[in-house]
Length: 175
Image (tube, rainbow, N blue to C red; front, side, top):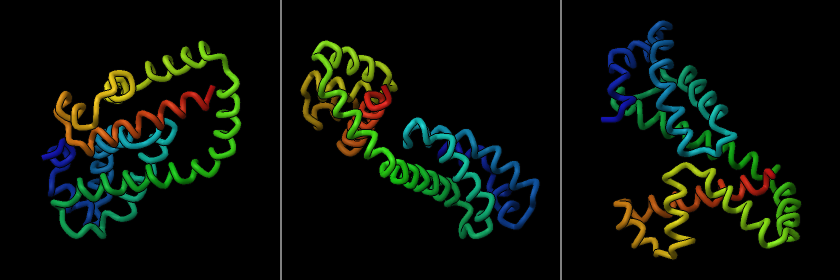
């Protein structure tokens, strides 16, 4: 059972589905910390607040359409994941021109300056992302070896590497 499911009483969800405004406010308050935590792991850092807001707004608007109370947490996290992806796609179009300019700037940096920037970018990563990047790109372990060391699935390792590289790129492009 997820933390969200334990905090959100099925009776509370049912009351919110039925149109009880107080229950809906309580449900949103109970769900918000878990949605934020999920968005922090799924979204780009700049998109976390927007993804949480979009997810809670959709909860407010659509809780009445939820078919089964037991599927509430899965539904809510799917909504948050889609919000993160939508925000990423929206900013990807805008980022294209900025990234081209930043990549051109990075190409002209002295190797020592680039090493310092890259080191700072890696240090800025959350621990679970820094760990996989160091094992993959510095220690040169395979995906299967990293999965064994960290007791994760191959898919989890690949996702973390992908997200870590996106965060590193975002850090380098920002400067």
